Length: 349
Image (cartoon, rainbow, N blue to C red; front, side, top):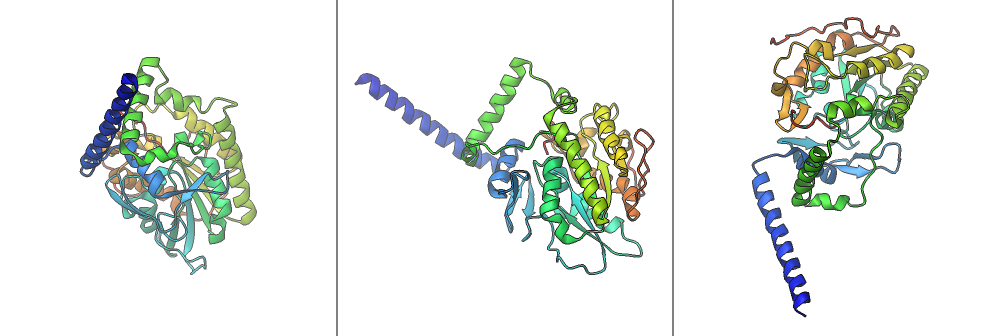
């Protein structure tokens, strides 16, 4: 009987500790942001499971949330964008595909490179950009979403913004995802992961990202197939396609993922798709931390989004073209101002 009472007292004390920890974390997080907690809230407040397993998840139409210090509003079609009519109105319509960087994680919508490009690409013909960027997507999911929903917008062009972790396999929803409703679960789980990763000598993010591009790696094979599928689909529909390779923002002067970028560019060259590698155009940024949304999150902040827009605008400004860029050759520079000039966890898509 004493043993049973002891177990009961332990369980009550544990539950009390967890309840107080949850309340304390929620009070602290009212004025602070933590990347893992905010990503968990994004999944709970904004995402829905898609009936299409190739897509995995989508945004909940009409969802509203305050994430990573900024307001996030999802339109009626599940996009972090203003409303867009399916009917064309004479403007040059561009569908933008990408992951959380294109979504604009931690940045106000009007400060994202997708929104900024809308004003930079105009000329004789006004431009309408429809932003399909979705957090935690890989290339296969982006192309599947474009097939399912993006084609209905009848775009003139598609711009794919590629990030190095887009060669990961499609993530699967955990059966324990309900635990993400509790801040204490997310907080302590992320701390435990860091602790065990350090003790077990697990790969750092450079090795992890590099290994994604090994021949035969499932995610890389799916990415190659998705890029070819997108190129073929755009050719068949008469849609222009251009791809921008976004830099990973830890080490820009001695970029560690140049080989991965070359492999992606090689696939695109074979498909006659123009590609711009932005990493060489960011080599002048000597303080990468100044481009992060927070000290524990290397997603691009508003300054980095503007640099991305400025340095890709010239490449993207022209209409559809079938001329492929040459991987390894100096990429075209963008117009606009060019400011002169082991780390926290890498950005997750």
